[in-house]
Amino acid sequence: MPNLRDFERRLGGLVEGLFSKAFRSGLQPVEVAKRIVREMDDRKQVGINEIWAPNRFEVSLSSDDAPRFTPIEAALVGELKRVILETAAERGWGLVGPPEVALFVDGALRKGDLEIEASLAEGEARVEPQVPPMPPARATLVVHADGIAREVPLDREVVTIGRMPDCEIMIEDKGASRRHAQVRTSGQTSTLTDLGSTNGTKLNGAQVQSRALNDGDRIVIGNTLIEFRRR
Image 1 (spheres, rainbow, N blue to C red):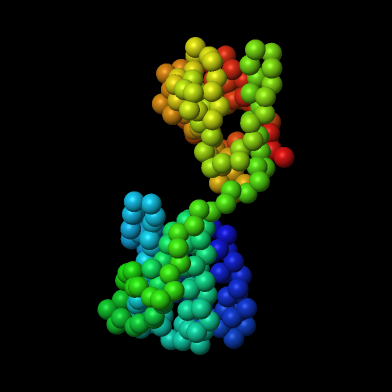
Image 2: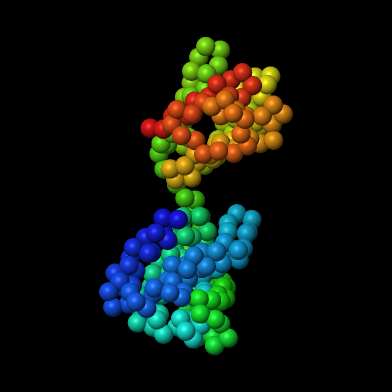
């Protein structure tokens, strides 16, 4: 995740130098951030039109790990709050109040272990759910049918291919299922997945279930050729 890579980069200067020896073993700061993101996902609440993620996190560290975190506690807490905000914005989740992070010591935990209690804590400043904007299409599918080639930009997260009129790419091919396959794009990666079709989906001559696409890949559905092109 980009926000976790940024987290590591921002904290890098603190962990290096004076604290580098302390963080050669045991619990690492980025592990705390990853667990918080996981707790946000696991404990989010889905409403009718929105999703609310936990915004308060009580982080318990072992008595062996806690002293190593003390010198950077204020900076760590600040960066963890930033990760919470960035993750919520990235995934379209809302927060019922501002992010809250508190560190505690639990003598029952072993070195390298941690426990996190996540909850929704209402505050005056809510972060409303947002629909993350899709970046400009960086790839296209070129559909060859009836002697005509048409380009379909991958400008949404999921593009479905099949005979159904509601498919983003509708193909009139007897060898295609109604909802035959899909291409899911996340960041720089587009992945082709067969949706349980009757005749299967071929990629560069081989039948596949799910596979990441590379520039120039050739997808065959029934008798229809579809090329993947990266811009």
